[in-house]
Image (tube, rainbow, N blue to C red; front, side):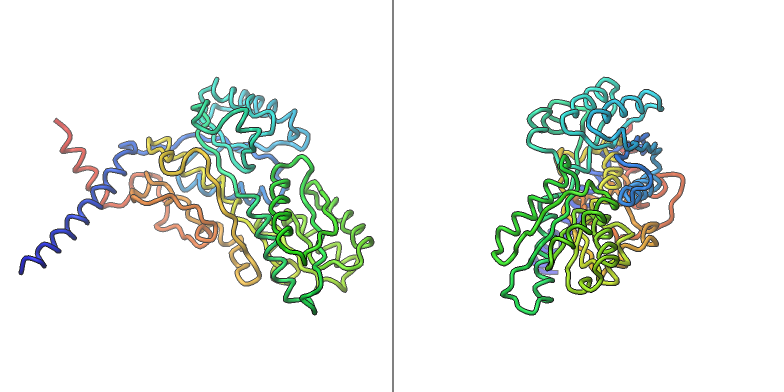
Length: 408
């Protein structure tokens, strides 16, 4: 073998060895014997809410895959207002077995009460769902800043979701209209007046409309995330506005109510109006397949499920902070009739949350939170009761060898 080739072989071999060592070193940062924490999940809705049913299903699945004990509590309607929320969480924490971690949302103006309680009880908090507002950050900072037991926050980029939904609907409707010179008449139906999520989605909508002189917002109304209220308001809107081209809906539940009311009150426009929403609920799938709803943006349905492997790693001494930071912002993705199969409930059992955990897989790779990738992921091999037995056997051998070499 001549010198140039020999040198090349040496460099490649060295590179592979360093990569293997890096993977091994990363893996060795976790506990020698992996274990699973107890996690409490407080859901800001009742069991009948279609979006939160999906959130809970995925969170349960992630917990089962990582053998995590998950305690789920739902907030009743009268406990979800901003004045009762902190009190309800205190009652749940007092009356339940103490968890190692708490997953819940933060209520505007009452965040400090929750954070002080978990700090007092030494429970790690991972907040999620609604983005941290500027006023919240001014009051309490960000995770790992002033409160070490507040270890993370994950939420979708709601402004981008509102913008992308509006952009998609405008482009689709432009293809429907006979003359592209006509203005597109738009109705927007948002969540609640006090909802930061709804407000941010509206910001995205307005930002997109400001960029298009041919987009005319006829009216923006708030339906309090209610199916019944949306039906009532849509009936009035259909009477008030003769020509509606686009209906921007802040949630799938709202878009389904819109379609149902159009079918009941003015069915002749169902094929000309373009409707879209946000949430990725299973229930919107037939609406997509009939082309009654053009698109749903989502993926944030996975967020509590994504938190589970991050908690697993944190509990096993592999902190995600250096890579992800304390605040994680996820990007929503589109599902249309073309890929509506991704919303099949049969997809649920195969979604793989386990391999997001670096401790569990032993693979030195970046954390990835992509909703489309998540739905297409498959869990293999089947689960066993012993977490350690499911690790890559090659890595197990390296781990054992490394430990033996370090022993006196």
